[in-house]
Each structure stands twice: as structure tokens, then as C-alpha cells.
Image 1 (cartoon, one colour):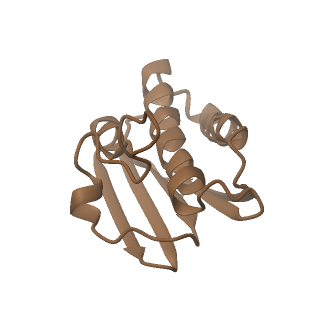
Image 2 (tube, helix red, strand yellow):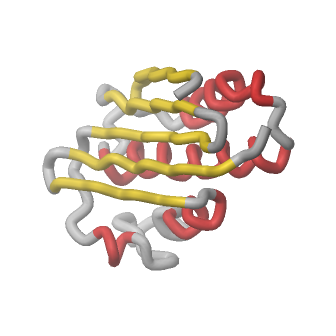
Length: 140
């Protein structure tokens, strides 16, 4: 591992933008292509939004953790919440699946996370929380 960072922030919707900014700032020294950075930031947006909206049910007193690291080949991102958890991860990964049926939502965004990363790992325990780990290869 060449570098590592971790930050916690309140589960406020406006902090999705903060998470994207932190990710961009952390990766700036790698001189990555803009497309790569945008894909990572979009995947982070999806995961952080899930923590806020679905994990914490918009309880903005809770904390979301964003951790990132990189080595000579990959960027690793983890988003962790201690929210309600996911009962069925396979079902949650289906396009358009949402826990918020009364709202207009396009699903939980796992499809986007999978498209924009090389590996997506989701672990969750009901009533304990969820960890989303994304790995994306790059070449210096």
C-alpha cells in the first residue's frame, strides 16, 4: 500500500458531494485520467447515498465512513455504515430494486458501482450495517 486515508462524516445528503471531493483530492497525485476519477467518484456517490438513504433512513445524526487506499496497481474504496443492513444482497443488486418504493429511485446503484469498478464486494448484517468495498485498477 502506497497511501491510505479514512474519514467519517454525518449521514447528510450534502456530504455525498464532500465524499466525492475527498476522493478526488486523495487521488490527485496519481495523475489519473479524468474519466477514471469520475467513475470512482460516481461509484462513491452511489455507495454513500445508499448508506444515508437506505442504511440510516436519512437519520443525519449517524456516521458514514469512507476509507481509500492505493498501491502501484489498484485503488481500493470502502464505504461503511452501521445502519439497518441488507437482508438479501443478491436481490439488492438487481437493477431498479429499492427499499424506498414510495419514492422515485432508480435502484440502489450497485449496477453502476459494478460497471465503474473492477471488483465490488458487499457485506452486510441486518441491524448492524453494511460495508461496500470497490477495487479499480489503474496503471501509472
